[in-house]
Amino acid sequence: MLCAMKNVKKALKDLVYTNRRNYYQNLDDIDLNVSVGLGARRLFFGQTYHSNQELIDDMLKNNQSEFCVAFYIHEPQVLLDMAEDKLYLDPCVCYRLELNKYQPLKQRNKHIEFRFLREKDLEAINKIYKPYGMYPLDKTSTMENHYSKALSYFVAVRDGEVVGIVIGLDHMELFNSPEGGCSLFGLAVMPGSRGRGIGKWLINHVAEHYHVRSRSYVDLYVDYDNKRAIGLYEKMGFRKIKRFSLKRVEDKEKEMKYYC
Image 1 (cartoon, rainbow, N blue to C red):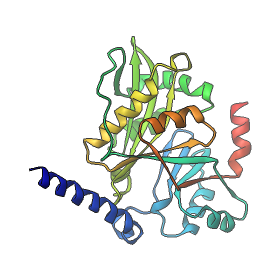
Image 2: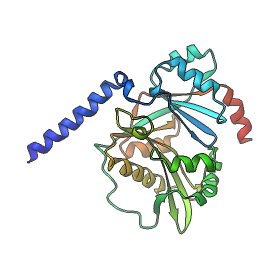
Image 3: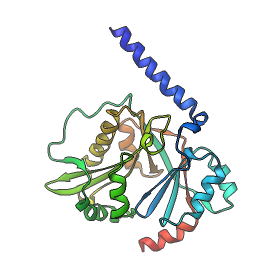
Image 4: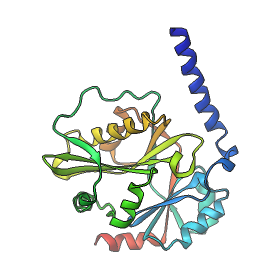
């Protein structure tokens, strides 16, 4: 029995590595040129683009939102040269949690309820985002995303008050990813509630949500100098991987005006 279980685990591990090794050979199986709007920001998934030029063109011509960012860039130096000073390298690092190795938290937080977002939560969420200089969520795109299978908005509630938020993005649903991965975005906890483990529980909730759906990993991007957050991620089993993100130069000035 034990030998059979080991063989099953090895087969699953081999399948994961095979999928990742063949990732760029399987472009015919995925949706191409994929981006998703999150209120004032639009995310571009670099691994869904056949060519660097297509990604650059889509980012520069996009007028659907104020700010654009491209994730999962393998060779940023190439795109930066091709874009002729119209893009810049975002100073974030990517961390990955392998879900086949993840051990969910054994205890349950009895004082916090974790549930899907409701429309009435949006005002409270944007109040949480504001002190961190994070972009607000708008009602239209948020509810459209939330009713799809691709994005999941989770909130933490204490005594009837929303005190935390995180967004999960399922790459399988977004563009039929051969890797079977996911990512999380927009994690924030009410400033007065920090230090109580709410962020950790939100991450755990996302990990469990995708683990039971047989996804292979969860990724996130974080500022390279956010030592507090990085320390939490590493304790939870996240490991740094070499993926980069790019932003538009034209958005820099808008960002400064946006927060002043």
